[in-house]
Image 1 (cartoon, rainbow, N blue to C red):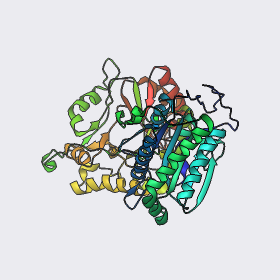
Image 2 (image 1 turned 30 degrees about the vertical axis):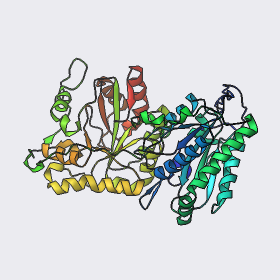
Image 3 (image 1 turned 120 degrees about the vertical axis):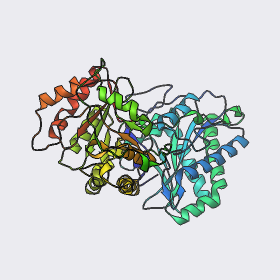
Image 4 (image 1 turned 90 degrees about the horizontal axis):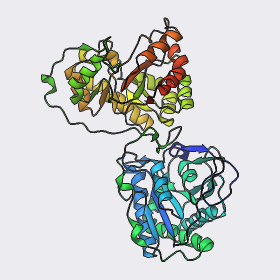
Length: 505
């Protein structure tokens, strides 16, 4: 995990009181299901995976360590004739909701999620639900005691809730229907913890396995003798897509929706050869004033067909979605309120940031990431004459220097690019494509960027409503006080008209 734990695992409000019951759910309390006494079934969750590396330190990735340990635990438990469900058995990305679904659908008796820590500290700790019952505390305590018996730098004990609040919970602890815990196997940026992890991996796996079996025997009798056919990974069927739902969704959560830590996405485009030979004539994009029978700008539809092979997006698919995007070059105090509104409405958006903006407003950029929004690349210098006015090397630098700054300072991989001023050429589209980016233009924009000459709220809201169309990509400038004021009303109107308002994916 990166930083403190709650930056990695989404949290939801939890209640302090907890009552265990069969398939009972009391106003937000964790729902648990009574085991069916057919033998012990445990779900082992290797944290992170795929595009989500988790914490990293000197080319060491959390996702690799958690998978190695999870496989060792699986092997040990199977030797004891325990049913083992794996959320993943290879380098696969899963949303937190998918991980919980795997455990819940398998009706596992226990859910154990393996992670590693990072930050100021050392040693091993285990996290449980804020209202953990006796069996959950027994499971976590047995695991913690077993690991300490093998040898750890520091026994950091069993903890309830999250780092910030004992009344809030990490997603997997609140959405799994069985006793669960998150085991933090030392700090990745601590050399001694890493050495202990490497030297004692098999012993740690055995300690975790023994703790699981011992807990089950205490509360349910003999935990062996089950059907070991359940040892295959269910998680391999996922595509790794997020639903910035996700929510991923995640994003996987409702603030960073249902995903693990929002780390962006790395894509690989088919490279375009002989870029220099392409047309370098600058074009000024605008959606135009002519529309088809679905209210889609004819120019956007035409350009999508013409430039789609460059991974350029002028309009989305012909479905009732509105892609909400904001350009961020300067901060006039509106972005916090925009983020508040998006959070209130449960909507994700894409924010295209310049490098100077990210340097000047790191807290806002971090908030965008933490709350599950998509961060897009809006260049380094935002050249007023557009990228086509620059050399090929300069154009590449406009993309990649900002990319690297965001990666280095926020741990986030951008893959969406918005051309400054909408000025592009065939050649510049190819440059961006070859940087492994998708270009995102727009199918709706209006004059909202002049902070000293803002349109009236009623007029602006009506424009936004009148131009709704399937696959619409809305460009709004975040410095606009008018946009800030009407955003919630527009989202309500769009949803009432049957549109889903989402970040561009």
